[in-house]
Length: 447
Image 1 (tube, rainbow, N blue to C red):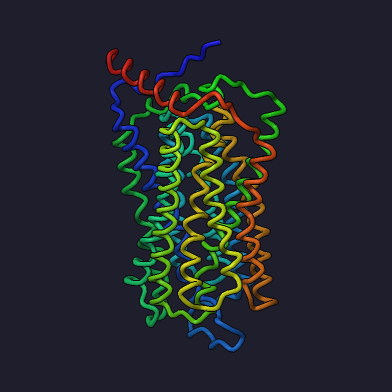
Image 2 (spheres, rainbow, N blue to C red; image 1 turned 90 degrees about the vertical axis):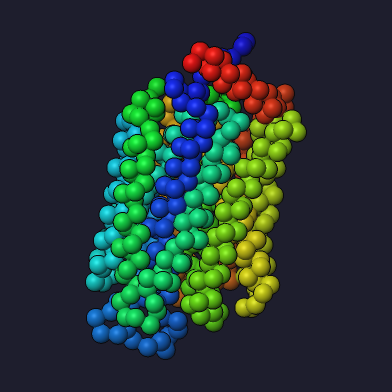
């Protein structure tokens, strides 16, 4: 039976416009991560280096490792709840309005953290931040699914995900120049600067799109494009694979996101060294995300199937993330830093394939699916962050946590191999790409 691929070109919208919207999604992810990482950047100032650390100056905050872990865990739980709520909403309300609303909400929460006077105030701000930030992913994935063909989505999702690295590259510079470590209380300023960035994105979003752009049917899934309607059993297996996948790859990513600077301080690196390395680390992660999308497109041009491309790319980047196991046993030095750069490259490079896998499971309920997966993921991450904090407090070491973080992406690959199935060996991506081009040309003639 033949399958009709829906027209992915909106009336009056050029092909370049779709990629401009993907660029806006990149910027939204950048703002998202800048808000999220601000606390992680200033955490070494609020945490003691060891048991004999000097007390906090008068009127200044100081956190214990357990309190910091509680804040990370609280953020995770709030993110989980927010993912369910906004995921459900994104399938029922127009993303054109939902997206800027959640972005303004998380920007306000980040701004308010700059005025925190103690643990509970900061904890509440991070709860609100997590609740609102969760809305980014259902809205963003709903948008790329709506605008892009299956063969284009891994590249689109790579652009989307690379915003995390760009934000993470920028935030150390913001902290370094707005918050000198020698100035008491200067750690508050980055929260205010970053929290004010959301308004500019909202204006760009509202003038770049129209409310009608994100209404109506979304694009095809790879199931539809490859003429393979999934059975209920296959769908259940693949949903289980996605649950394992999202928890595993996020556990690795968020270990380094939340604790890498604390680890570097423990190893004796000063703030300037930590800042320079953090920028290098997130440049590496950005290159990982973008190169994963480009690698998938290159394999597509060689005629391989959608599923094969994603699996090969995912496995290659999971192997790089596994270098964290080796790094866990190394002292401070060039080899350790080099391995961490490769770990960052791999740990973000696995995400575009995950997003594309999730977009193949459903069209109608993409927001709900993303919210459900995020809920499960962030509940698991809450326990993971608590575990890291207690292990660090009790052992004065991150070794075991790094070993676990390095193995998680490979566990995810095994789950994909066992549960997802082989895909359709007769459906090369190049065929999808040709059909998308024909659709675009047809739409151009009609326009």
